[in-house]
Length: 51
Image (cartoon, rainbow, N blue to C red):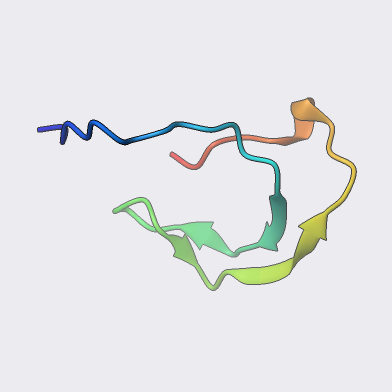
């Protein structure tokens, strides 16, 4: 059930993190993730949402 928040403000993300990982687990989590840094220039075609 979604929560209703009167003061909620949805924004477009402005920072994109670059990560590496070994695999996805069956419950949708990253296995052995590693933060590589913040990407300054981002092509929209290289961004995807986590499942």
